Amino acid sequence: MKRVYPREEVCIGCHLCEIACIVEHSASKDIIRAFKAEVPRPTARNLVEEEGPVSFSVSCRHCNDPPCVQSCISGAMVKDYQSGVVRHLEGKCMGCWSCIMACPYGAIRKNPVRKTVIKCDLCLERPIPACVEACPNRALIFEER
Amino acid sequence: MRADETKCVGCHRCEALCPTGAITIRRNPSDFRDNALWTPWHIKNIYKQAATGGVLLTGMGNPCPYPIYWDRILLDASQVTNPSIDPLREPMELRTYLGAKPDAIEVINGDELKTAFTPQIPIEYPLLFSAMSYGSINLNIHCGLARAAEEMGILYNTGEGGLHPSLYKYGKNTIVQCASGRFGVHRDYLNAGVAIEIKVGQGAKPGIGGHLPGEKIGPEISLTRMIPEGTDALSPAPHHDIYSIEDLRQLIYALKEATDYQKLVFVKIAAVHNSAAIASGMVRAGADVITLDGFRGGTGAAPTMIRDNVGIPIELALASVDERLRQEGIRNQASLIVAGGIRCSADVVKALALGADAVYIATAALIAVGCTICQRCYTGKCPWGIATNDPYLAKRINPEIAHEKLANLIRAWGHEIQEMLGGMGINALESLRGNREKLRGIGLNEMELQILGIKHAGA
Image 1 (tube, rainbow over the protein chains, first blue to last red):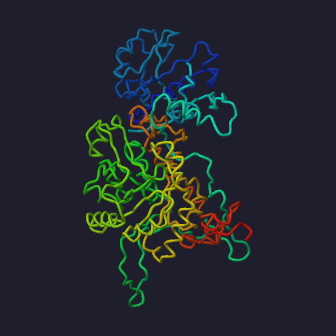
Image 2 (image 1 turned 90 degrees about the vertical axis):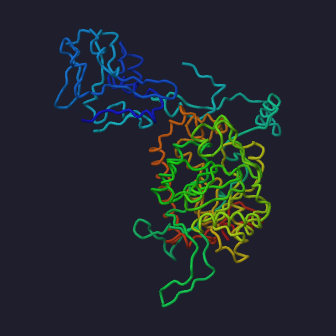
Image 3 (image 1 turned 30 degrees about the vertical axis):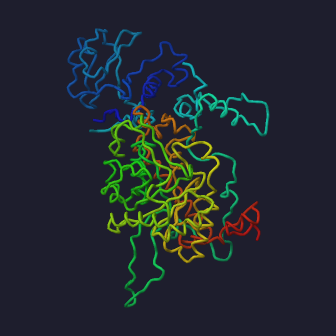
């Protein structure tokens, strides 16, 4: 399956991938409205990790054998074996954070408002995920490996 | 978030990356009382020097409002007679061979060439990437330049900082430079490219040397330059073994010996008052290619007073050098490359018509990968990740993107050159080279026209 791969060597730590993710997952899909008018403001599903010159954008790896799915106590985290995407069904999530503990990549985040978790959905309705499209230095690659 | 405008250099980086287009960079309007003699530029420079006691430093090329002769030269086009040619339908030859050409050729048995040629370098476009050292710019840019040169069938120049081991594979498209500091020069380096350039002078700072500060000499640069980490890389003003044309000849032949006469030797000088006589000496000393770098040529660091006040315009130097070599009957013995302030394909066409075989571009190449000519190269903090080796900043150049943009620039200029040639009814660069009949001056005085060897528009 196609996944989003970060390239640390050219990531400039600009965080535009996070902004693109917020806008994509907002109700209006408009950057100004998403940041200024929408309450609560959508949370980015990716996170740029930085230390000194090293930076890269972390998002769900959509593992073949996902520890988050195994650890989920309510069946909210499911692996769609057709598309390969690990999906989060928010209605079933009870906010126990088990998946956050289990994820070896730190790719799952708390949704601070709804007391559920939030993770990358691979922008399934778009041909290319918003973060990949927004990266100004091609530090995110969407490809089959 | 707050902006500290006192530190803004006007690089436009924030403007380029702002996802909402909410940033516009404007000059701070605060000004001094009007004075035609004491401009804010001079006043602020004096403040700076009074505070530091130091030499004013700057980067990039001479920005002063001296005449730009490219803008006072117009090109010809065919009408009715000698019809124009459509490059999209008919072949249009841009390939150029660099190197010394024989005085005459001898053919035997009808079609067999008897005359032996010295090595020739074919380039697919009359454009080369000018010398920028590894150190002054970073490896990502060097990588982009090398890959673009390979794709487009042209050459790039290592500058005087040696050649990084990872770039030896681009040898077919590499000119290695041997400058006064001799950084990174060893047997394999000399044999790595297709040509060796002896840099005597640089357009941005004729007559002075270079200084790459010790803090920029990290492990990789130390290895490539063959100097200890953290030591200043000082390039002397002269080559300490070249004090005459005879000495230059010795070095040219030493390099030819070291490379078994397989590599071309370029000699590069800054365009100065007596360039024509020097160029004649360079050709007679055995240079295969002579490079002239005009006073608009860029640099990673130069004293401001030198950059802005020393040297002459490349257009005049080119015309006088080409004319002098023709008069002496030695123009065929060397190719002529010009550098320094070539901004667009029209400048290239004008340079070729004035007598150049090819042109070097560097500032234009850097602009292609983001440079906004903010002139802060000498600080080592290039916001676009070009003239810096700070790992945080250098990552801003993705060699892959740099490669594509540089190749696109060459491709685009190539198309435009073909269009202009076609318009003149010419289908090969060979027919344009030194063809000053295709040029007319506009708003130039008698002396300027005479030096350029062109007629005034309307004549």
